[in-house]
Length: 311
Image (cartoon, rainbow, N blue to C red; front, top):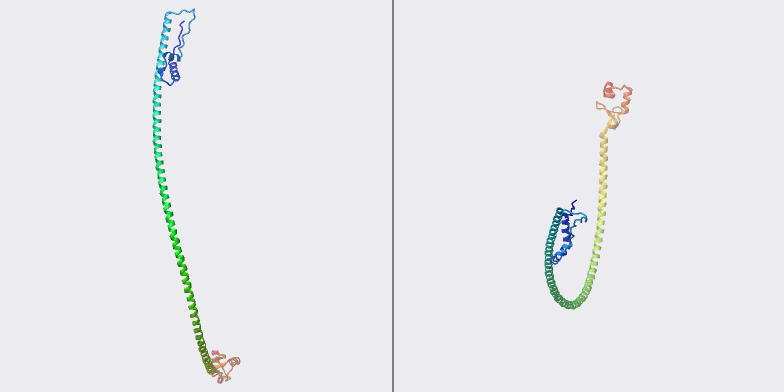
């Protein structure tokens, strides 16, 4: 019976390589000795020792020696690859560190330049602020002086105006007093003149009123006389007109009178009847003639038949 040795498979080699990379420190790899490197990795498991009572054949020993050499070579390859990868990682970390340091240095330089610019801007702003403040202070002082001068000139002008106003007021009072005295004298003279004129006007008015009253009385008498004459003329005219109307009415009445051929009495034509023969009859006689039906030819001038036809 042949004893098989435990061989290291590729997956086991990958695990050893990863473990070697993870356990290596971030310092220089040259500090470690070869013996320490070999001690960090577990040794391949040796083949189980056969019992002492077993005796292997030379061919089996040769196979075991070949397997062991193969395992040692594989282990050396894994260790070499791990060392190379560690050196590469260390170089990459060194480049990253240098890049970070350069970036930090550049950032600090930029911040320093920016701070210098800010300080320069602040100094310039402070200088401008102080300059502007000094200018404003000078302008304020000049403005205050100008205002004080203006106030002083205004005060002097107000004093002059007040004195002038007092003088003008006194002159105005004197002028008003003189005008009042003159106006009083003038008014008194005017009142005296008006009283004299009013007296004359009253006398003239009384004379005119007396003359006007006499004239009005004369006019009233003339008017009354004229009215009397006019009234008499109107009465006479009315009498004449009434007489003419009475005569006209009488004439019309006479013109409308018709004589009845039967009774020979005159009456208004509205109460009589005219026959076709142009004779007039009163109603009563005509009714009697119709009732009797016998009227003489002398009385009517025509036969009875003619009267019936006319009716």
